[in-house]
Structures are given as structure tokens and as C-alpha cells.
Image (tube, one colour):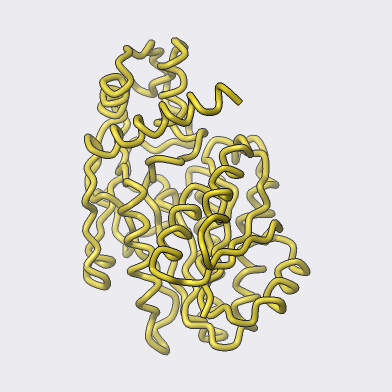
Length: 327
């Protein structure tokens, strides 16, 4: 049977698709290849996927219900969906909130409606975010914590996605799991994220903005650990009547952004030019994942600490920058 992966040209979608193909799955990938960050990176990811047996790709928007319905009609073998497509970025949600409503709200409804009409659906796994915890101060964040204090529009859309999932599970019995990702990083990552943009600025000799002197803390989670968690969850759908699950997936360790910068400096062999900047209202001071639930379900254990993951990213980053600078 076949797995549908939305956002297949994105960071997490690309790595998840590779892992599915590596274990012999047939994968149908979709992505709209939008211009939120450079399309060349998405196209290069897709080119690597296209070289693998068992992969097919359709460019479409998940908010386009006619296009999604048509795809489902052409691919009757789909029995699992990994829904990773979304409009990402906390700060950009204050610039263009409409993009988030389209991709994250309408897109979620379109995909779960498609799942509802899919005969033989085994599991619908979708991306949520640690941003749903908003202004919470109890650490580590646990799935049982209240999530009614959003501090970003992005976080609000991701919480809405979870509520849509819960309603569809209740009404139609769709087996669903939402994964609250915590600060995913690694090779082939997103240029809008701090670690990637910091690396580019350090190499170019440009200053970087470090909020509150780098004291903000994040649960940085390496991409290979994220993918292992996604596949582990995908293979374990909720039992009938269990409803829609929501699980944290993180490194179970909170580290300062200052330490992240120090690791980038060491890997790149250059000192960062740092500008201390006040923390924006949409940024929380700390994230930290309690992973007891996903560990109990799948045996999930993050294996890549930040001081190993950042050097791996830097190695890839140097090669990527060299290759793109000659094109």
C-alpha cells in the first residue's frame, strides 16, 4: 500500500519520505513549492527523492480541495497519510496571517476530509508544534498541560488543527495522531530558522540578532530523531475508540541559543558578530519537551545531542553553500 506525504519538498517531509522509501514503502508526495524560502532548496530535495524507486510527486496546494480530491481518486492505494505541509514561521505569521489561515486551517480541513472518505485508512499523522504551549511556564511541557494561551498566530493555527482532528475523530472515527515538534534542525533544513540564518550571517560577516543575550532556551531536536519518531508513531495507530492522540516529539533537553551560536562558531571557524535584541512578543523564553508518552508508545529515544547535530548540519551547510554559489 501507499503513504501520502504532504510537504514532501519541505525539511521534515523530505527526510520522512526518504526514510519511508528506504524501508520499501510506496510514497506519493505533494507540495506547492511556495516561495516562503528559496525554491531551489525544495527542488534539490525533490530531485533526490525522484531518484528513489517508489516515489511519485504532484505539485498542488493542500488548501485546494478539488486538487486533493482528484489526487485521491488517482491514487486509490493510499492507506496512510503523513500530513506535514503547513505555512511555517512564528514571526512571519504577524506579517501575513492569511497565509496561515489558508495553509494551516483550510489545509488541515481539506486533508482530514480527504482522509474521512479514504477507504481503508489506517492512520492520519499530522504536524502540530510546541508553539501550542504558548505562554506556559511549567517545564517540561506535557501533553496534559493547558494550551489555551497562544502567544503567536502560528501557534493558534496549530492548536486549531488539533481541535479539528479531535472533532473528526469523535464524529467519524478517523485514527489520528498529532505530533508537537520541538525546534527541528539538521541538514537540508529551513533557511528561515535561527541556526541556518545564523550560519549564513556568520559566514558572511554579518551581525546576528541574539534575543535577551542568548538566554532563550529551546529543545533542539535533530532531524533523524524526529523521523524515527514519526515512523514509530505511524506504525502504531490509535485503537478504535481511542480518539485523536497528541504527542510531544523533542530532544527532552532545553539548551540556550547562546550555546547554539557557540557550536556554530566552532564548526564554521568564525566568530559571530552579535547584536543583543529584546525578545519579540511572539517568542517564548523556553521550550522543553516531556516525551514520556511517545517513549511509552514507541520506545522513542532521541540519540543526537546538539553538540553532535550542529557539526553535522555545518558540514552539510558548507557543501550546500559552495554548490549554490557556483550555480
